Image 1 (cartoon, one colour):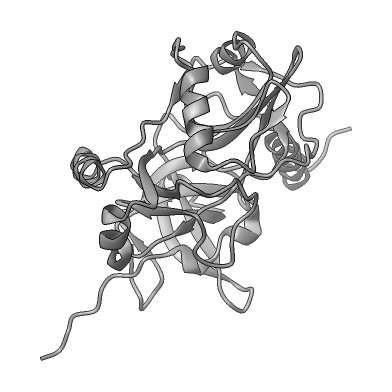
Image 2: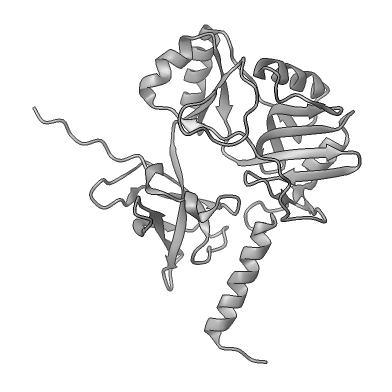
Length: 310
C-alpha cells in the first residue's frame, strides 16, 4: 500500500541501520570492493578487541625513550579481527559483531597454513595486522606482546598483499627516528605497546598497556540533520549531562553518500572552539557503523589553546 514520504523515509532509515549493523557498507565508501558475506552477519561473536586510550603529548618523551614500549604506525582505517576455524572465516568489528569481509582479505586468510585469530586495522582491501591471538588451536592472549608479534611476522613471512604485518620499532633510537618519519609523512598517528603485556579485551578506565597518540584529530559524531539542497550535515555530540549538543557542520564529498540523520560518522578536524564546541576545518571521512551512538561524546574533542596573558 502507498505510504507517506515521512513513513517511507523512516522505513528506509530502519533498513539501512539494520544492514549497517550487520557489516554492510555503501558502495561509495570503497569503489570496486566486493565482500564475502557471512551467514551469521550481525551476531555477537563473544570476541572483543583490546581498545586503546589516548596519551597526551607531555608523555611522548617518556614513551619514546623507554625500553618497555614499542612503537607502531596508527593506520587510518577500521578495526577488524578475523577468525578462521576450519573452512569458516569470520570478520569481527570493534563491537564484537560478525561482519562481511572484503574478498581479498577473506582469500588471504584462507591461504594461511593454520587456523588463526588476527587483530588489525582494515584499509580498503588490506588488513594491517598488529596482533596474533590464536594460532593452530593455541590461545596466545596470555603471552607477551613481543612474542605474539614475532609469531605473527613468522606466520605472514611469505607475504600476501591483503595481509600486511605492522612494522614495529623497539630500540629507543629507532622509535624516535620512526616517530619523526611518520609525523613528517602526515599519517594519522602512532601507537605505543608494552612489549611484555598480555592481550586484555576492552578499554581500561585510564592508561593501560597500549596507548595511542594522534597527529591529526578525528572524532565520531552523530548526524543531527541534513542541510536541504546542500551536501552538508549538522554534527552533534553527547555532553556530560547526556544531552546532544551542536558541534558544527561538515560537507559530504561527491563520491560519498549523504548519511542519514542519527547515524554515526567519522570526521577529521584541526581543533574545536571552546566557546561554541564547533569543530574547525572539518573533513568528512565516512560512516562508522561499528561505533555505538553513546560513544559520540564531547570528551573526544581537542579544543583550541587559549592565548596566555602576560
